[in-house]
Length: 101
Image 1 (cartoon, rainbow, N blue to C red):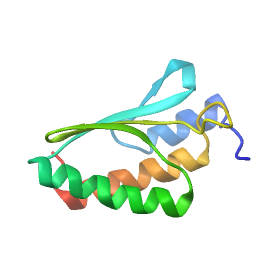
Image 2 (image 1 turned 120 degrees about the horizontal axis):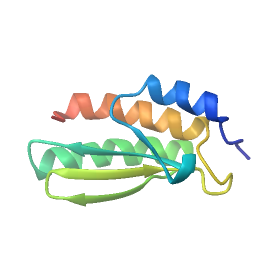
Image 3 (image 1 turned 45 degrees about the vertical axis):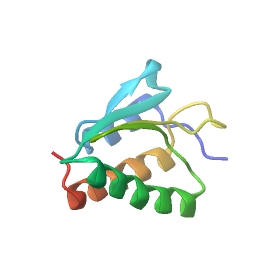
Image 4 (image 1 turned 90 degrees about the vertical axis):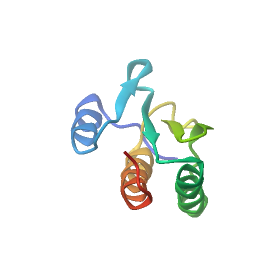
């Protein structure tokens, strides 16, 4: 099982990410991605779903037209782990390639 990040490690990781915020006292991180349209948002979600499946680490997310709201937490660890930071980093890269604004 993955171990939760310390407060310092979590803060350092968030500082390296763009637009992600700590939620619920460090139990999760969150970000809202906005795209040019539904097809771009769906393309982003498809890319992320493939990566998440390969990691066996799945986001909590919701999609409405051009917006994807994401919460990341490692549920069995009870908070944010390196897996969440890895997936957040991938999401930022995928969003930049899919036309996030």
